[in-house]
Amino acid sequence: MIEVKNIHKTFGENHVLKGISADFKEGMCNLIIGGSGSGKTTLLKCMVGLHEPEEGSVIYDGRDFTRMNFETRIEIRTEIGMLFQGSALFDSMNVEENIMFPLNMFTDQHRKEKLERVNFCLERVNLAGKNKLFPAELSGGMKKRVGIARAIAMNPKYLFVDEPNSGLDPKTSIVIDDLIQELTEEYKTTTIVVTHDMNSVMGIGENIIFLHQGEKWWEGSNKEISDTDNEELNEFVFASKFMRALQKNKK
Amino acid sequence: MIFHPLGKYILLLKAVFRRPEKWNIYRREIFHEMNSIGVGSLGIIAIISVFLGAVTTVQTAFQLVSDLIPKSVIGSIVRDSSILELSPTISAIVLAGKVGSSVASQIGTMRVTEQIDALEIMGINSPGYLILPKIIGGIVTIPMLVIISIGLSIFGGYLAGTASGAVTAQDFITGITTDFNPFTFTVSMVKAVIFAFIITSVSAYQGFYTDGGALEVGQSSTKAVVISCIAILFADYVIAQLLL
Image 1 (cartoon, each protein chain N blue to C red):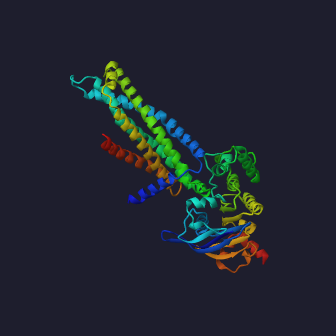
Image 2: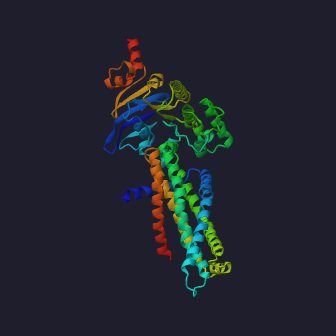
Image 3: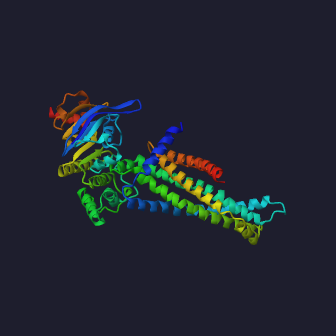
């Protein structure tokens, strides 16, 4: 479990996160949702240490990440897998080298063992045999899947996913969402997904946190989200014509 | 105004020299950078060096109007100018353009495409992994390029001198072998090592702190070249003042 306690983050005059506290549960897809500029990605970056919050703490299974120095953070970071919005694959490396990279850095396995792990991860994301392709040769959906394969290469306890569906068609988005949910259930990871895609919210949102103007406005599951009377959340959820039509039919 | 970036640069260097996670991976990266910086720059360094020597010979001969000064002096001047100033400094300025812009844009692109964030999430010391191999690669190969440049510059001077009739082959060889002070070569190597450090570290700093997108990567690359060139000329003066 990851506990976030009273996180504050400012950029110059802009107070982006205003005392956010939340619990992200193990073996579950935890979603952080909200409109553009609500602080979703900033919260995610504070949780993984890419931004340092001015106040508050992030606790990984009882270990206070925010109070650790670079060396002691490495232990937790090797337990983290992350899929970035743009996949962040290393351009100079092919698919195999990208996935093998964390294994090269942090394990003493023989090349054969590492290759087996790479092939397993690639099979898991339905990209078996694509080892020698370079990122420039991959489609957006394939890049996301290679990003996921790299994120799970070290068998992470915590999986962070930033906007997994950005730039993808609806069909590929569902493939990625399903993959994230399967991996979460299979490896019992604490998965945190930042998204504003309502398909993801309704599909995999077991525990959802809604951010609005840097504050937590609502917390619940995808089963509860359409029945809430929270005005800001309703505006966000039913912003699309599709969701409004669904609500109408439901009524 | 200058203190904030200077402080950031020093803190970045502190992170660069942190103990590497795995030496064998860093070693592989160092060889890769040595190939990229050293072998990749050999052609341009060879071309400019030959012409530097040739121009120095022709212009020195043009200014030597007195019959009291032996023509062999041309060889001595070409040798000392090449060793002390032309090869290390001009090579460094050319390399600041070629290597510096490449380093800044490579690291800058990694920054704006979140590849550096990905390294940090994995628990890798990104300044060390990305910058240390470039600094070591530069420090090893740029002095070698300067040595090659010195040889080719003198050779260029010889070719131009003999081809134009400004100096005979015998006089030129007498000139380059007379009164050689080996300390000039030491000064040249000190310059090469310091210039190599400036080119790689300043450019890496500019790339590492790129913020924005493709436009900012281009701006970082330009700033890397400009700041490296100024720093090289400043260091050139300081080294000359201290060592000569």
